[in-house]
Length: 86
Image (cartoon, rainbow, N blue to C red):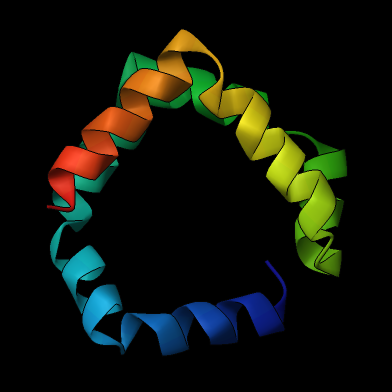
């Protein structure tokens, strides 16, 4: 991850929303480790997506997330995340 992404992530974690997310870390880690989480990770993986993240290519990132969320696994994972963050 680039330094600017790390810096932004650190700044976000200091906000109330970021603190709420940080408090849910164990539950989030379980979701990431789940079969749905692993499948979505596979869909989002790859050098092209890593380059897009490092360069700030929002279009490519948004397209990849949209594609991942359009799968059954992605939809289930998104639903679980919504429930977790209530």
